[in-house]
Length: 227
Image 1 (cartoon, rainbow, N blue to C red):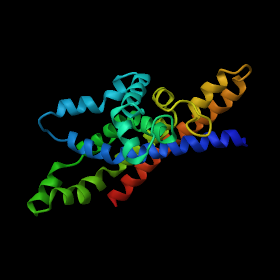
Image 2 (cartoon, rainbow, N blue to C red; image 1 turned 180 degrees about the horizontal axis):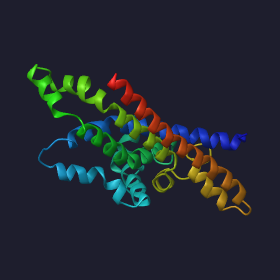
Image 3 (tube, rainbow, N blue to C red; image 1 turned 120 degrees about the vertical axis):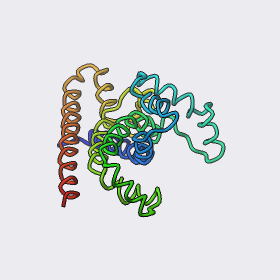
Image 4 (cartoon, rainbow, N blue to C red; image 1 turned 135 degrees about the vertical axis):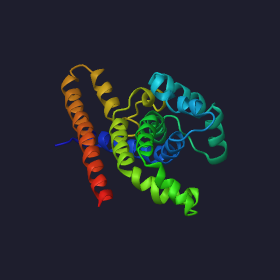
């Protein structure tokens, strides 16, 4: 049975991971569809997409702080125009998580798009289907199982994001304190090892559930598409 504090931590974790997935998935699908094709500057876009994997997460969080902090160019503009504060908020934690899971979403979606038979899209083009029509009626449904599996895996990974979140959004109980941040916090307290183990077990269970769920969803959608 979860305590009230653990339920709050779990709620924050789900909220942050859900927002991150919601914000990053549409752009990730668009980038993946583009990267599955040949075009000038593809190598540069591919490198930019994968920067969060290459850079240390703490550095990614620091760069977000420079951009979206109150004195940053984007953060200052958001505050002046809309009165929105991003850094050190739950939305900030979701933004940091979205940046970190973005490469994972792009990679899973790109593999799904590259596995498509290009002759299907060529046939649709011959039948005068427009680019958007070809994308939404053919490419996206057929790539759906891979995209969905990647989304579930990315959600599970987002639940465990630490470095970028604690740097950009801090560790505020009830606001930005997700499961990994809560584990870090209790380990700083004398005798907090037992609570840390309990939270770690919860985190492990959620992560494994996400991976298993992604596999079952991919198989289910594949069977449906095959009829």
